Length: 264
Image 1 (cartoon, rainbow, N blue to C red):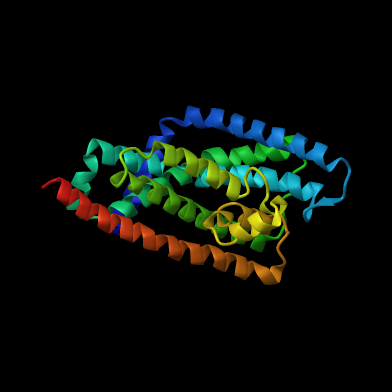
Image 2: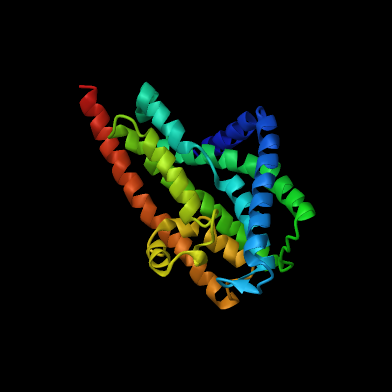
């Protein structure tokens, strides 16, 4: 069974490789995004030492790392699942000898591996050449960030799967998918770091999974989290990984029952 899932990762990687030109243009788009945010924040700082706990150098690094991290964990699993539900092809998944949700995770991981090697890594190199990005030198911090980035992928994929499975219960979840993308980008800290949110919104966000996708990993990587608190931050990701598993299981079980009822 494990070999089957490994093959799924490989096949998705090869599929993405066939359309690699799209990702080369994506590198340019992400670099432009980083440039726009970099010059915007430079104007906001205006020579000030720190804002919301960020120095200007930390903000530059945070912007570059956050956008390149997004290049890795981003996927369209929600649209894939919703499309398979709408055209009925999901029905065949119920009789196949594997778990549909795990299959989607493995396919997303295959895409993530492609994005890591041919999108995120070269994009970060280009960003470091164009902007004053200061990456850490501590190998332990790189290993920690790599693990947290993998957890970011899992959590973001879980949210996408939940959104995609909602197509079983509503006629058209296109609006929900668009809203989800905006909400994730905003509340994960890609657009604006969460420390800049007003107090009530920052407090609310602590009870939501989005900060575990971008803000927490990028904060650790930029040195804003003390060494003694890193394990606690990593634990937050693990907790949300477990919590989000529950609605996925419930939705999938309900979806199976609903599909059988619709099929007579």
